[in-house]
Amino acid sequence: KYPYVSVTGVFTPEELTRIEQIGDILDQRVAGVTKGQHHAVLKSRITRTAWIERTPATNWLYERIERTAQILNAKTFQYDLRGFADHFQYTVYHGVEGGHYDWHVDMLRPTGPQRKLSFSLQLTDPSQYEGCDLQFMAGDGMETAPRERGALVAFPSFVLHRVTPVIVGTRKSLVVWASGPGFR
Image 1 (tube, one colour):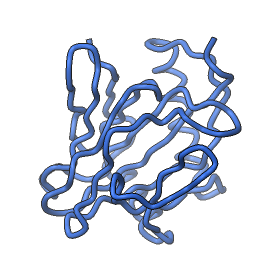
Image 2 (image 1 turned 30 degrees about the vertical axis):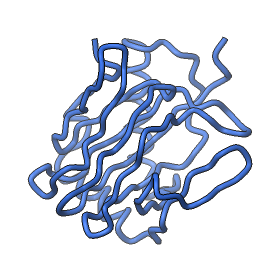
Image 3 (image 1 turned 45 degrees about the horizontal axis):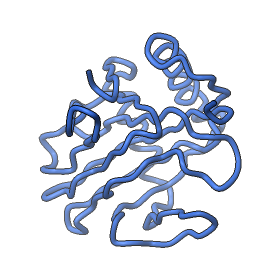
Image 4 (image 1 turned 90 degrees about the vertical axis):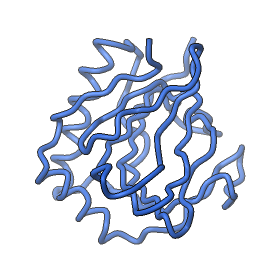
């Protein structure tokens, strides 16, 4: 029924805090949007991002997401996946900035492996912010993803989705894309 699947319990509360600590010390920059060969900062996306690279200190995070992605893909999507073509994106939406990301899809890339599955790991307890819902547009209408801290939401990268404006507080998430050869 839903254009996504969601699991909890992949990370302990302590591990979620550790992921936030890793992301918070990185240089978070105003995010842009890539269209074709061009990258620009647009009003359709107001957020700050940083890239968590795979290092000995973050290997546990990559391995956990990889195992979970393999399980979810085998059970639900059954796509031909070959790994992650991008580093993990630490994403922060601030209420004071009106953080949001309008309707978009993740799979459009000018070069390189095709993004096939998108993952969003909810790092912030929903009591710490208002708004900032991850929503999907599907055949049955609009669906809103779970907001529970630790919820890992997986969805096909071609599904139209958005993050509504954050009204108060700050929402943090980890965004990951599993890639593979183009769909046939």
